[in-house]
Image (cartoon, rainbow, N blue to C red):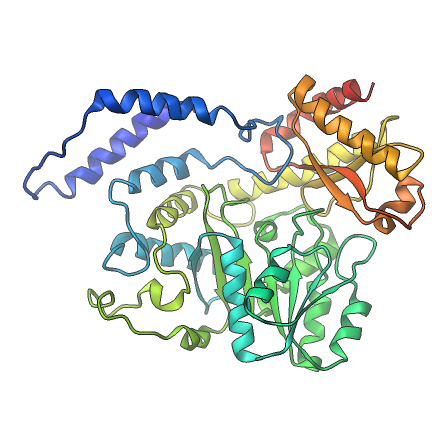
Length: 445
């Protein structure tokens, strides 16, 4: 779809929006169109100083272009600029948010839930761990060493004790190490990550849930990046069992602004027990009087929140429901298959080698070399030259030497090794894995 097509669709939708307020008396705001034009052109020029996140040759960080319907719906809502903190500021968009959140909860098998959209996964995880601490005050939170760094930071902000659990060879949480910590009797919550943002590892959630009742813990799932993959038909049996266990957890975080095709920022926190809403209870002297219905601000730590995020997500879900076997889930399958195809080609390369089998859509690989230092330097050169010479944008990741010592053939002791990382979030990348490897071989030579 071209920009002009999107603008025509937006203009049509704006006409419908304007007709809904046609009974109001007309008024004109002072606006110098000629003054706007040079400012907007300058802003556009400034924005070209970005990596081409939207293009298939961008295979670096977790940056996925929004679907056109999300872009258009988001822009459409800005003419109203709703605030979903209270119905006073976002009546229509609040109703749309509740529908969106229910759809996400159904995706994880929950009929009963409490939840809302957030500005992103960090705020969503903060709320989940804040609730956990209300239920298990002063008890430790555990997460794997591959979990997102925000868990350590969030628990520090909330003054909750935190510890990181070692990982197995595939990057998922080590169950023996976890149970060693649980036996100490001071753990309140275990954070299981379904899709670590580093290597795409999926923690053994089914096995973690087996420990839940024995040790009296809460299980929170950080599925900010990987949550939507529950719809995929390409998960192996082991990973499928881990996703199927989501229904038995206490809280889940998912970011529609990752694989959900949404603009930033759009996260979501879900609780399986709606009664945790009691911990949010507060009073406001001026906001909650337009309706007796639940205001989203009454179950959220955030106050002002963009209603535009709910409108965009609602439109996307309306166009492409998040259900197994649909267009949306097929897109996810394509991303997983791209990562698998890519590492299969890497395996046949004389210059590179894979370091992990992808569980989802992240590939971790490296130049070959005689020492950790030489390998890190070579990977840095590939990162720089691939972007400069081949317009191929990758990412780097520092990995503990022990976790990659065997495939790289290096000593396990010493400083971390800088390796190459690609996130295949765009279905279009499936058609260019051969071209990407050609470009990688070019910079290797």
